[in-house]
Amino acid sequence: MNASLPEALRAAFPGAAVEERGGFGPVLVLGGGAALPEACRALRSQPEFVFDVLEDYTALDEGDRLQLVLHFIRSEEPAVQLTVKAPVARTGEEVPTLSGLFGSAEWYEREIFDLFGVRFAGHPDLRRILLPEDWQGHPLLKDYRDDKTLHRTGD
Amino acid sequence: MAIVEKWPAFTERFPGGGLLLTSIEFFLNWGRKNSLWPLTFGLSCCAIEMFCTGAPRYDWARLGNEVLRASPRQADMMVVAGTVCWKMAGRIQRLYEQMAEPRYVIAMGACAVSGGPFHFDSYGTVRGVDQLIPVDIYLPGCPPKPEALLHAVLELEKKIAADRLPGRRPVKGARP
Image (cartoon, rainbow over all chains, first blue to last red):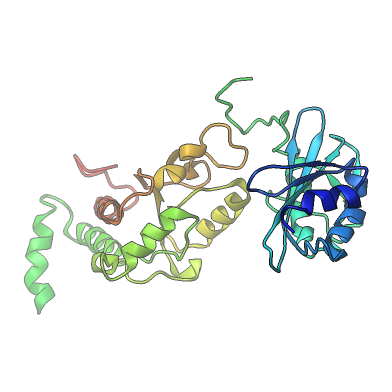
């Protein structure tokens, strides 16, 4: 399965790009955050994939947009890792939640909301999870500034 | 019997002082410094060294730090062992205010002293617990060894021993 996984991904997701990296499994790049629930449902249930463990769900600030990054593993042999990426707009875009599909996504999405400000539509309890409740802003955005932080670079 | 034999030795330490007042002060400090009650309270990796200091190999109960109390109402010494984040700041202040007076604070490790490696470019770290509560002893290290924490407790005991009742002049040459 390991060798044929990129081909199977290309066949199942014709609109998405598939990148291959040595050692870490392929990367499936979706068109946007709105495609996430459908793609994850297919990755979880289709017998040629069965990626049934959402290992990690985080985000990256790429300057002009945010990139949601999901890591999947399988709970059965062969042990294969899959990375799914989905770009979303920096502000204002609502992304459908995955918490109905993967229980672990609920707290991951709260963390992404807390640190990056991405709002997840349909999330049952979208509150801050790491920072104090009255915190202003989302500190892992590259343009985040506050009056408490000492910036060594001075910009 | 034993305390009566020791009595002249205690009084001789304060030549020229009022006997009664000097004795109360001395015995108060003597009792306080030999019976510290630390709070069961650790924030991160420094707490591992603190637990090690409390365990039999180093055994800070020898110094009078008898047992880590699980309630701030029963504790009068707080070792801030680890990184203080802004979410924890209010909790630390509340714990400190709930502790029995007189209360003492040891800032253990670089993070509790100044923010340590998170001093710059960190949105979440308080740069030194002395921004929140008064600190008696600053103990640097990342993390400090148990021997260093024992030294900090001994320094705190010296500081308590030099404590003065309200209105008394400080002892000449004593630590502040």
